[in-house]
Length: 271
Image 1 (cartoon, one colour):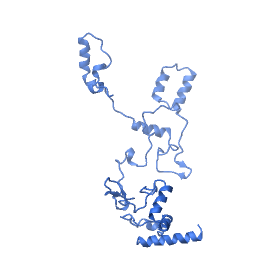
Image 2 (cartoon, helix red, strand yellow; image 1 turned 90 degrees about the vertical axis):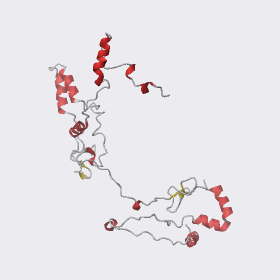
Image 3 (cartoon, one colour; image 1 turned 60 degrees about the vertical axis):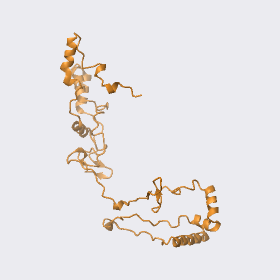
Image 4 (tube, helix red, strand yellow; image 1 turned 180 degrees about the vertical axis):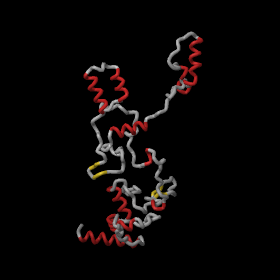
């Protein structure tokens, strides 16, 4: 910016501040790390602009050509000249934006101020549970639905059942049996040793996939594995279902199947 333009800008800024009966705010003072914890946040948002020079060129042109000519010129040049936010992504603190149809209810940036709000409530869980640590966001430690889908880590119980049906004297069966007992060789876990040093926030290493091992993962999945036994809806009426078929000299099917077992609401078309 040239010297004449800079001087004109400073003059316009001073005139605007004088008309608004405000003074140009000084720069915020530096705060050290030691005193940062003792400084209370403001309970009210600032209404003074931190950019008093903003709009100096528009004010300069308006004073020279007049308000009517300035508005006509602005409507030709500026995209959406009637935008209440002046096309700013973040509005200034003193801008009041009407949010009701009558325009009486207005909203301001960061109002009410964050310092006047109640402290943030962090949900807590029972001590010793999986969700006690709020930083545990991984799902693979409790995703039992996709368990044993990895070909490198199959279901050991199912594989042992398959081996029991094969001839034991076959070398291939013996080799596969030894491989199954050895377990997967991949992902042994780095035992908490990262590039930044030793990490001790998780003893089992399940916080990060690089430190997780197959043994710790299987233990976590065993703890999350559902242990309830679901029952079909006809379980409590199975005696009546069997009696119905026997009275009619019909073979008893597996379960209470048929169209009549569907609730009425389920048979109504929704389109």
